[in-house]
Image (cartoon, rainbow, N blue to C red; front, side, top):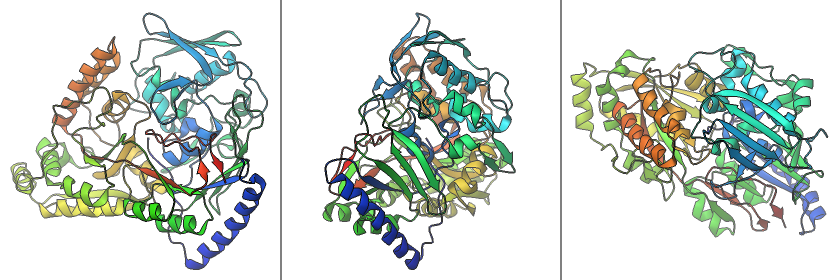
Length: 554
């Protein structure tokens, strides 16, 4: 899972002071209303703003974060784990061939607009996903296409044949999904936030499928920006882009245990030092991704540091279409050998981070324990470049600004360290810095404008295909290569008839990926959240899938 757009980090002292005062007033009212016994308002600082509020088109963590509070999926993940648990479906049953899934839909659930959740509404969502009408919409619904393979009418390149065969609702509490072939990623993928069940009536009323592209920018519908309608414990109230304030309110008609909070506010604070200052001032109740250097100081100040288990990967991406020299395996091997990843992990990442040997963490079934980390060897890197006829290689190295990610706490510092490694073996680096959602993600994942780039992934669920299948399972502008044999090896894991066979196939696929080296795995990190004393019930998730329904403030 990627992450979100950032507001400018250039906060002046005067602006910060005004913001602190305003939020203090807002929070004081909520705390008084709560009386320390539930209710009230929680203000949580986030490093970037959402692109919109339609999870189908979400590609990043800051768009997913508020969506997880407003929407729900058929299957969910138990708090603090990647274990499957009932969501909007109380049961899910495959047929013997794995080509049909029958969902028993929870009774008594309504969308925020008052319309009922039933089997027909669930099928309407599957039909919407499968029939997205435009290239712009399809290019943004990357999670759906990764899980289902394609669309009824593919409008974009690199997407294959869809495995979706239809959905029927024989009664109000049943939805039956048909597939043309089994997929090993189901049922776990049914918990993806992108596959949240949304109000069909609201989507139709507010033109939810309307996505337009102008140059490298995408514009989303009135539904996505102003009228998101799910079934979750919080409802959308407003998003003030000027102040970076997203306000959600408790859904009093929620089918389950209601939220303790009256209001949940996500406030965009791009600068990590400003987030820390606001927590110290008492104007926010917590924030995400405190940099490692702040951890002990936050603890010493009496705050609660909630550390997630590492379930991510940071990698250096290589675009073979961007520069023909990168199509030479010796050049890619040279780049890998040039990187001092041990030093990077030691100096830039939190305690518990480790150098990656492959593109998934050890907790994932299909991890290959026989693979070893690529050694730091500048002499070998220079020799490989000379052998490839590229002793004076020049590369455009893209990296994001105004962002903090679970796998990448400070992109500028990480870029600087890796760029210095590359320059030491004779590679000239042209730095290209772009705002995360203000151009960077589109440049590297949609338009393939780069030679090298920094990016990463937090696992959406515990499945090997969610890592290497997402990255390397088909041609993508991000990596710019076409290797049918590698694609086939990865697909073999998903087509396996048992979990054991799938894990074996994915171990082989991991080895094949590292031999081909379409990118360089850098590290796995344990990202943290921090909340003040008096906040209870926030459970850190290895999937960064935190739900605030259980949170209370004193």
